Length: 316
Image 1 (tube, helix red, strand yellow):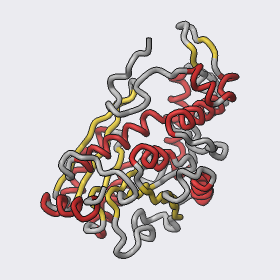
Image 2 (image 1 turned 90 degrees about the vertical axis):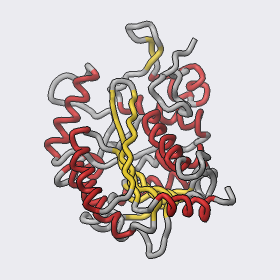
Image 3 (image 1 turned 120 degrees about the horizontal axis):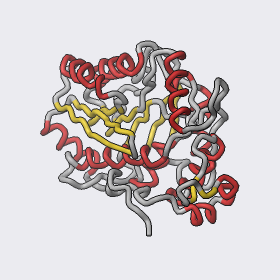
């Protein structure tokens, strides 16, 4: 009998424990990584990056009908259930300004800042709700990988596009075109402030897995420079994002970003108030022992938000 993960969003397809026999049937490569753990349950070694990547492949095949998915070595391999939660709560956010009805289909346009080589947010968002996505990233190889994932999956190809951010100083500038409208922006920002801090965080994560003791270790989740750290860390990145969002305030209904550390929220709220945000919301999420959240903001009044939905989603 499956045990539901009650802390995940009610629409999250990953609320039950992994059904490894079914996942192996969908993705036979997974079989070599599955064994019985000390608790008598089938599982994988989550400290093994190849095992984690293959589990992701199986989940994307089984739940999202994505037959072809891969990422370059040492790039971020995210946990699918947590990524799905962000997408489902974003759907609720849009519903909140659309008479509690989730807008679905190609008319809903989402900008993913830092889409990464894995392209997971656009995959889930399109397969679950039919949304179209623009994925932006500063890493050429990540953009190439995400573009390839979309290209080799017919369900994704017409609905996902990708853009390279050429400036290390900008987030929306150079990506959002004049007059272009987005219903949502999403972001999982780099949360470390230096390579050394990112390395220390990675070592703690590996230690918590109870594997790979000693100096030499392999990250089970990967991660490149732009994915893990930036100058000033999470706070500086989000501050820059907020300031740039104010410059395109009428081109997006809701801007959002994950905030990894709750201690950073006060600075985020302060920056949003200074930027003139008219509505600020914080949505708490949790996956296992990990607590996470995202902050959403808009510069539109309640009436303008309602009008936005009527104009953009009236035929959905």
